[in-house]
Image (cartoon, rainbow, N blue to C red; front, side, top):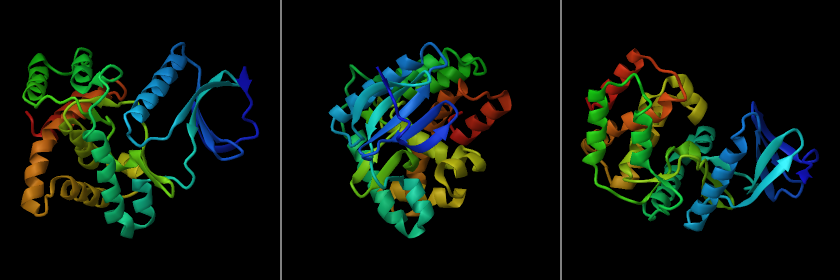
Length: 279
């Protein structure tokens, strides 16, 4: 039976996806247009992962399953969080909130990185990277070996990873603080998440950073430094630089995850290799 959302408020509308709020403002429907045979399977996987994250006690909006809408669309029904905004959006609106928001970021980080992951439902981050490497033609066998060696030398862990770890994917609201965008959730050493946050804060082009974080690169670096201070008690510039040097090589792993989605050429790969400091 199809659900009629014509009377629901449109929260956002993008190519291929829309978000609607129920009239009682208790639920939000995140839709996907079924233009490919596997779209419903992708949505079922996202819903399953959301359930599994919620079950582990990590603060994320509850979902109420998948519905079919008019127009060949499907949607996941999520608890609607009134007054929510991402931590990065909150800081961009009022920079005086930065210290408080980055403390929230650290508390949400701990809820992920200090939780043993459900390894039956989630993929190993390392296995995900190994799988990607088999399909990245622009990397030589020698370059792939360097990346694999980095993972082999990283202490093995089965704690949770967000997979797209940065302040834009954590939200705050009058009801509380939550983790969202769980499509890349996995398990492994937290250094893998930190490498992604370094990649997002230091290596993305400025125009993309502004679209994600709603602010300029210098402010994003302030976010980064506060996150090091909160998580690792890195107070001085020397302590922050030491921790950053440990994290930076892992940024190449996050770049690899985007190779299939965003076309890159050899010059871009060489630039990513240089900024990672791994090669």
